[in-house]
Amino acid sequence: MASFVAGATGFTGREVVRVLAARGERVIAHVRPDSSRVEEWRERFAGMGAELDTSAWDAEAVTAALRRAAPDRVFALLGTTSKRARGDGMSRLEAYQRIDVGLTLLLLDAVRAAGLRPRFVYLSSVGTSSRSSSMYLKTRAQVEAALRTSGVPFTVARPSFITGAQRDDERPFERAGAAMAGGLLAVAGALGARRLQARFRPTTNVGLAEALVRAAFDPAAEAKVLEGDALFRSAGET
Image (tube, rainbow, N blue to C red; front, side, top):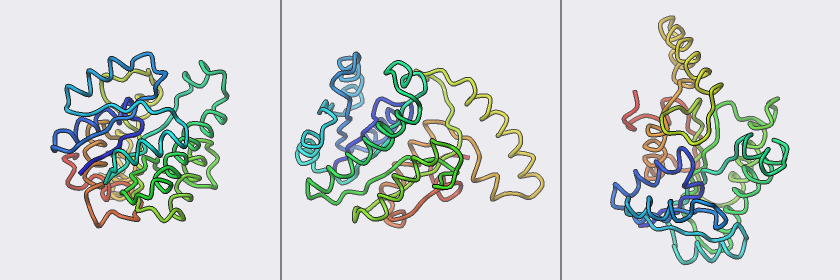
């Protein structure tokens, strides 16, 4: 049994690698080859018991990597930040299209080109809709639509705010938003809006990683979009 994690160095991705390795899984953590921290991540993931893959983000290279690994699960945890987009000279929309959408669809196409049928676990977001006014949520909807017609077994996870310590990228607005949302949802829960509270509650990267791994192994989660209680049940998150 093996899992391939794309976006392994991200805030959630590194925890997914840790949780999978702790289960005794063979874990292949993908790190882009031009990363300035490749050796740091190699050592860090080796300490968890995971392997490192540095295949270029190229259709042929990723397809070959997947054929070698023959994973039972593929985790697509790819995304960018405004800071990185600015550093690469891209607008937010261009970054979303090239990284959040483009690389995820490249990974999906590579799975099919490799002749594999792993569970494809996609990290989306609560509120995702093609009719959303948010560029971020619209691009997530593009990927979800492609998954539904791909013929590849999939699970979509839609968490709300993701918080936690040891984040590489500073996101003060997200932390403030999560704190505010937590307070408002506590009030909503007290007033009886339990479904709303469950759907929009903040989570930590650790809790989310546990939920993603649980869903990846759950036969009932195949072809499902999970959010709120459906995503976090039995994941140790309260």
